[in-house]
Image 1 (spheres, rainbow, N blue to C red):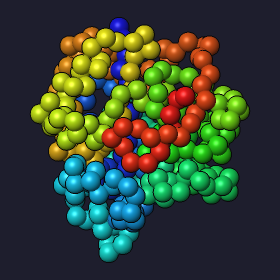
Image 2: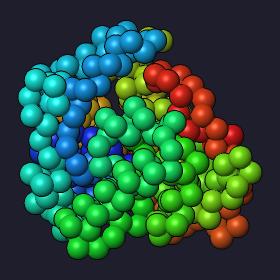
Image 3: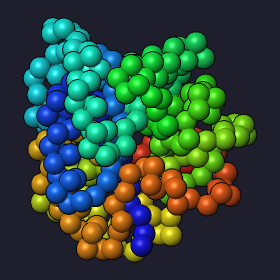
Length: 297
């Protein structure tokens, strides 16, 4: 049975408080697994206002009606409203995810900072940000995380090295076609990458005649013929745990009908061969997204 792993990125205070419980209920009702990757520090989403100067950002925000998904308060956190500390205010919710049997992992400490600065950051900045997330995860769960998933698929060579040195068993920081051992400028990183293999809903909806009504059927066409290595699908607590929850349910029903075993990243990793191929990680554009992302070459 082919595997399809669900990678749930939790980036905001609202997503943690409202999106995560809604997604848990749906996953439990469908009797499937997933991995929740948590943002563990303050929600400073409002500071992403600087993105309006990036090419394509305003058109993408309008296309997706981001204000409806995130809410007015979220768009003001860190500028006109105090930034809530997600890890401190939502620790009970995070532990409830683990207690319900779902895998939990590290997304980041401050997703706004990571998205905006990680690609060009130095070793000191990268290590500090990653260690802050590791420490907070330990504070909340009493145990270290075994996997991580970088916000926005943003990476640098220091982060790749640290993923290996800090004891992660696997990570999902890139886009690609199948699991692999990453290299960065020829340097081998001995920690498997489980890349996101499918486009995300926010990259598809309201583009090229894809709408909320047909997005699920479009994605299900892409997964109709399962590759040997299966798939990894990334979703967000803010969007699929909010207005797009009905689309996500359509996808779950469709994938089950296609014969997929819908699993966590941990269960997906357990089925990998020992001799994964090596692939360089490069930063390149992804259709429907803004800026460059880490991609399996």
